[in-house]
Amino acid sequence: MKLKSLHEQVVETEEITLLQEAGIYEFRHRLADAVAYKAALQRLKDSIKISAKNNHAITATTDWTVNGSTVEGQRMVRDFSKLMLRAYNAEADNCVRSMRPYRLESAKERLTKTREVISRLGKTMKINISPSYHRLRLEELELTADHLAKVEEDKERIRAERERQRDEQQAQREFEREKARLTKEEAHWRNALQKWATSGDVQQADAARAKLDEIGDAIRGVEEREANIRTGWVYVISNVGSFGDNVVKVGLTRRLDPLERVRELGDASVPFRFDVHAKIFDADAVSLETRLHQRLADRRVNRVNLRREFFYATPAEILTILEDMGLTNNLLDYAEEPEAQEWRSSQQLAHGT
Image (tube, rainbow, N blue to C red; front, side, top):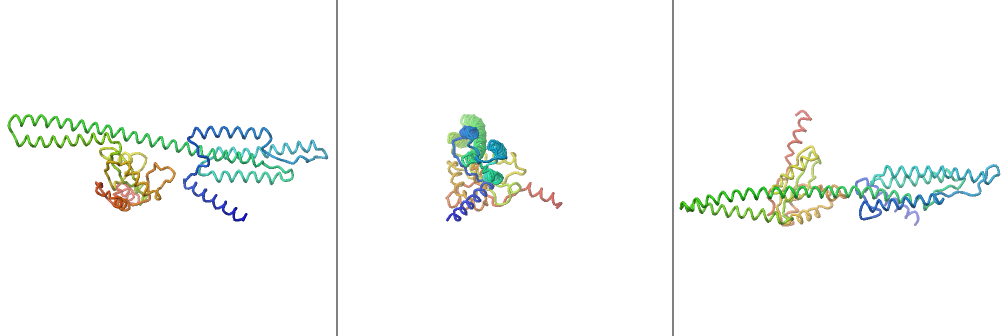
C-alpha cells in the first residue's frame, strides 16, 4: 500500500509539472490579490527568521566529542550545523530569486534534494534540516510562485480592461461621428424637401421624405447601439503566418466597422495582418461571444489566461457551431480559406519563387 501511495504521488507531481510547463498554473494558496500574497509572504518570512533565530531550523547530535572534549565537540557540531544551514538557505534563497510559476515543482524538488544531501553529509553528527523549517521554506516557494502568477494575472486583467476601454472609447467616437454625418445629411434633405414642397415638385418631395425616413431610422439605429453596451460584432479571424493553420481568434467589438478593430490587432504585435473569416452582428454580442468561447473551451490555446481568445479550430468548425446555435442569419460575411496574402508573398520571396 505504501509503495502504491508513493507511486500515485509521483504520478500526480509529474502531471502537475507537465501542466505548469504547458503554462497551466495551479495556485497552491488562493488569495484575493497580489497585495494579499505579498502580505502573506512577509508573514511567512518573519516565521522563517524566528524559526532560525530560535534554533528550530536544524537538528544535530549533542554527544559529539573532540579529543575527549564535549565542549569542543559541541562547538564543531554547532559550526558544521551553521555551515549546512547556510548552504540550505542559500539554495532556498536562490530558488526564490529565480522562481517562475511554471517551475515551482522543480524548485521544490531541488530544495528537498539539498536537504537530503545535507542529511547525508552530516550523518555522523546527525545533522538534519528540521521538517518544520523545511515546510516553511517550501511554503515560501509556493507563495512566491503564487504571488508572481497573481501579479501577472492582475497585469493581464488591467491590460485587457484598458484594451476594452480603448475599444469602447473608439466606438463612442465613431457613434458621434456617424450621428454628426447623418444629422448633417438630414439637414440637407430637409432643406431640399422644403425647396421641392414650395416649388410644388411632388415627386422630388416624396423622394426627400423617404430619404429622411431612412436617415431617421439610421440615426435611431446608431443611438440604440450607443445606448446598448451589449450590442456589437463578434468576429472570427486567423493569422496563418503568426499562429499557423487551424488557429482562430473569436473576439468582440462595438465599433461601427469591425474591420477597424481587426486592422488594429494586425498592426499591434504580429508580423502579418489578420484574415477575417466571419462577422456576426448581434443585439447581445457579449453573450454570443461567451457562448462561442464556452463551446470552444476544450480547444483554447491558452487555458490559463482566458482573455487570450485564440482556439484550435477552423472557420468551418465555427460555422457548424453557429448553425447548431441557429445564428447563421446573423452572419454577415463568411470566408473559409484565409487569404494570408502577406505571409504567402513572404514565403515566395524567402524561397525565391
